[in-house]
Image (cartoon, rainbow, N blue to C red; front, side):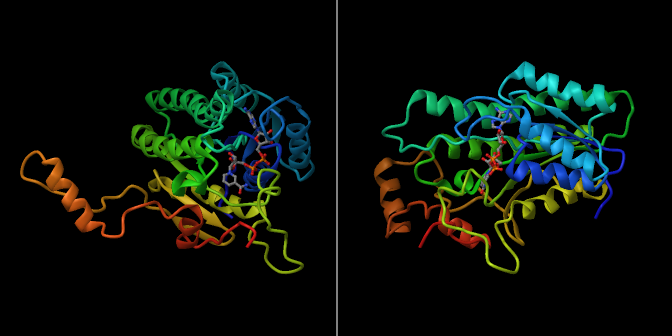
Length: 310
Ligand SMILES: NC(=O)c1ccc[n+]([C@@H]2O[C@H](COP(=O)([O-])OP(=O)(O)OC[C@H]3O[C@@H](n4cnc5c(N)ncnc54)[C@H](O)[C@@H]3O)[C@@H](O)[C@H]2O)c1
């Protein structure tokens, strides 16, 4: 395992599921960890500082160092306090894993404004706030002459990068997080910070009711949430300084560096298109129409499988 000795990490939503595994893995690699978790319900309601404290206790029991934080990542000032806590408690910040998340699935025809706003806030703004404050800290360190090796690991989803029915709010936030990764990676390269993103697949409270995917009786369990964390540890190693702006689909042992929104079919005209001519060209090139293949097809092409009950 690469050593992260001396580094300080924040993992948001680390009281349960995938974030908990990231926190445990980063601590095992030697990092001191701020375990953030609001501790609410899957829909985002309520709060409870117990899950974060439990993960801190697990890290400490294994000989590591950690501290709990119960801020809401969607609160811009709370995100600033979260970043400040890493610096106050452990003296520095090297790694930010944006992972906190909620679900409020609904078909678009029935989705409420609250369902839209809550999911966009926790995921999209919940990535912006912590990243914004960490970035300001790293820029300050870089300008002061420190050799910064900052890491931001974001969390998107197959739902966002491939498009899943019933998740217009969640998928839009997740696609936004993939785009956010591409932009912030380019902005922060100058300060020595890499920004990458996971599109994970794991059995957690978020997926256990939706999908039929019990653990196998024996052998490798591709949906164990701990399968998501070796990539986080690897990307946080100093040696991974050149890898940035990537979105990785992870299914068990299959990690796919995705290529989204690359150049596709070009419709070129010497000047402005005439709509009639363009329609003819569209129908010529897409004789069978053109429509998204959907999330399951995307996951399978990326080396994963359908999570749905067959
Ligand atoms: N499980 C999967 O297959 C899967 C697939 C794609 C994406 N994801 C994403 O991975 C991330 C982790 O999901 P999980 O499956 O471990 O779910 P989970 O529900 O087990 O964990 C999410 C954690 O985030 C915390 N949280 C929620 N809102 C918060 C807020 N505003 N501030 C701080 N903490 C907050 C929750 O309390 C919870 O402990 C999420 O962003 C999720 O959308 C998961």
